[in-house]
Image (cartoon, rainbow over all chains, first blue to last red):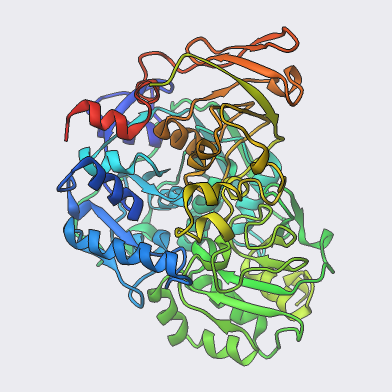
Length: 414
Length: 171
């Protein structure tokens, strides 16, 4: 019986030839992270050292740098724990990034690996052919033992085909999937994204899809590795790795083919990532804030698109356009490429890497009655601030076109 | 230790109750200086602002699809702090499920749970067998129990991941 990609990774990491959906395994974890409360759990248990400090990565990204005393105290404690537990991989502000951007950049993510990270968007690393899932309270178990239990999930396979139209990006593919199949289709399941459109898609676009696979409930989201992945990893890691592909006779619980030919840029309306409509159906809705950035769409390709759309134009007088690169590496690359010149000339505000407004933390929290169109990943009620605010999710082209128009706009007409 | 039979008064919630609703970013997440009890008062602030103050120790949440979707923040802890002893939902988002087990909050999935209860009814649930009774109406339905010998059931039985680590003496 053949195996899917995630089944293969769970098998190799639990010392088995074969695993089947439904069974429980204990598997070795290749990379994890830790937060202040994880270390506090270790302290409470009297644990003096973690299983492998080199496999633990720490960054403070949700409110970076802290916006209030409570968070500042948390980060101060985190720095102390980093020293105490001899964690080398700590990224101070100015050399930091949002976890899902900086980990691949620093070469911590490789094909064929099994990753368990605190943060729900840990599915992101599937773009690098890793089986990666979110944890939180059991991070302490991983830090002590280097292992974690898994129920081997069934796998859903999405084959994406058709040529992606101009002004559509990876974001539109995952929004289309969320709209078609809902936010609970992949609960407890692994998702494989395959097909010619994924092969043709930029690594950055794949990064977005695996990131937002969390929004359809996925436990793991994974793609095959190819030259785009290998080129990115070159110079970032010298550890050997073995990519995985699904067997031709792998078993899937569901298979879907999604054709993106002639699709429109998509917009997820409040308050659910699956409340998705083509942009032409929501045109004209007034906005006060627009945001290009985050771990979902905070890479060079995203700012290149924003700069292309806004060159020679201005942000609407009633709108603030926030630009939030996902890491300092991206920030510097965008600066050197001249995108910041173009964007600030148009009246955009360039911020620094932080989860910030996406999680309702700081730097762009919404007031009641305000509406934001954003490249981030969630539009739950109250997500970005006031319970009486609204968030629309879209790709960087749509967000930038909307920032110019002062209302939701179609980038194909910008 | 978690007992097999959990009895309590039912609160009803709809589909897609996110952890942003249970543990709002603007209050609970960005305010680590708040005590657990203070943070818990913001639970469901956006969708049902008067609710947290009404919850009593031993109450039970029943809900529709995808309960606890979204962020991995420890929203289960907020519910436990409020006094919630059990969550039964048509489906439960994976990270919320895992956090709940690890924090010793029993969770059960049960299709059609919302049809079997009115708010305020008394539920009696057996987490070993998945048997769910509405003591108010007399109706019984079957939820999905965790296998007795599975790691999540062992963790839940121990009262969470920290008590289990203490018991294991692997540290």
